[in-house]
Length: 388
Image (tube, rainbow, N blue to C red; front, side, top):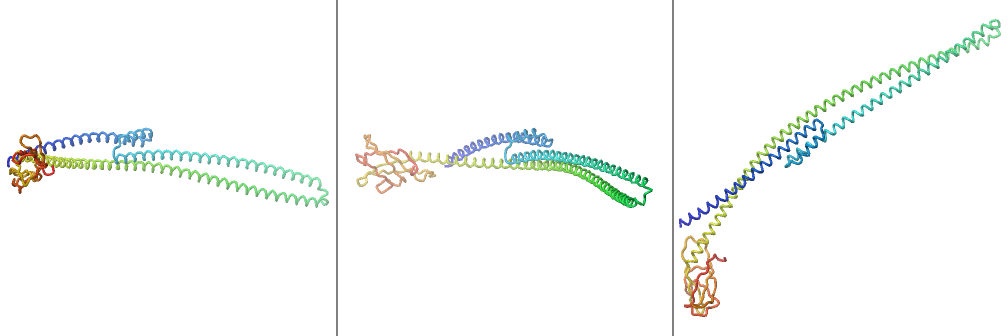
């Protein structure tokens, strides 16, 4: 019995070692190939992303788009796709920023051109008004001098008849006084108009000064905006660098976790392989033991036939084999009369071998052989587990 247990243990250990070695070799080879492919793809992707970022910063947009297309081909996993989307968004924002700067510069150029054109129109209008006022003043002065000459001539010619011409003189004096009043009023109006023009000119100069100050403030604001934009770009670049570093740290952490997961998976596969191999070895050992047990039973069982109240019954004894690997057996037998070629095959189910008499463990031969019971020869054909 000890030799049988030793044989079973030897078979079990041999099968277990074979399955375990095969499983470990296969997992190690697959792991090495997977790590090599992942490393190559990750290097290509990271290099393309860095070149695309550099091209975007230099506003070399065709270069950045080409590198992002390369990165898209080697992106692998959710983390790579997030990095790719972030780089594409950065390229889009930089394009929009350049377009905004070009548009703002063009709007400022057009506004300055409109201001210059309006100043030139105002200057031409002032020149025309000044020329018209000067011409009107000259005409008024000539009319006044002509009137004064006429009146002086009349007074000189008519000095002798002054009394007669007194009413005319009064009218003339009145006309002269009215003319002088009109001239005074005209002079006052010219002074008022001149003061108004001066005020308008001063207001224009103040407007021009305000425009220049506004333009200077706009230029300063633009300089501040450009400085803020540069600072923002630098801050964004620093944030992007920090984000890349965080992503690299996360990538390293994820890689470590992936390696640990692979190790755990490999250990689980090894354990499962060992368990499967052990189970299969155990099953094969049990099957081999059962086959050996059944063969030993087939070789050791002896059957005979008795006539029990007109029926032929098959019974016999079984060897005492320990341990009982198969607890229940069916004995397949073949019976025939001596000198006859007719066989009577049957199965003695759940054979225990307790007694061969009519009241023991027997099975009826059906149909009944055509010879006396003591002339019926019976042999064991096979021994199987019950129901097998």
